[in-house]
Length: 239
Image (cartoon, one colour):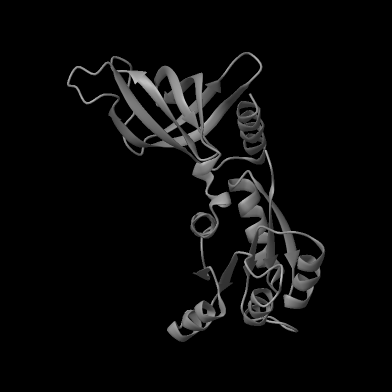
């Protein structure tokens, strides 16, 4: 699975760490590089190819607006996707950034999910739906309360899964927490993933539909589970 390179430019180390940790944990296809101001970012951009820049506005030596202007006037970098990540929320600031050629604008504070969504809007490479969801034929066991259901996985991603359960099986309710065991074969499995139910619907639009579709969003993945899921998705995408 190819890695897409993201340059994070911010003079606050805590912000860079937050973005780096959040993206690497929740987006399996990124490689993060850090710069503390526009000048450092220029050095990166002139020596390596990047797929996206996430940049603060107010920084010493060269601010985000100046870096954006430099990029848009650069002969080979002028089309590089650029998202301004800033506390500047005034309408005039947004207009100024748009006039300078920004592709996206996100205001601090923000969530990693919100940032990933904006990245996907700006550059389809970062839309997780384009590559991380894998159609597959596998087994899933859902444990919720004292009940256990077993079914077939329809698709899997870093964010969750969609499965079919027989209508006579115990069916979890919306927002109910559960544990998921995923098994593709004896060598490829991930066990004990925490999640909660986000959708329950009939698999077919008939009153006697035999199967129920259940969509699960994963919750609070540990680093170990993130790695196991990434490895599983990579093996499936290469199959």
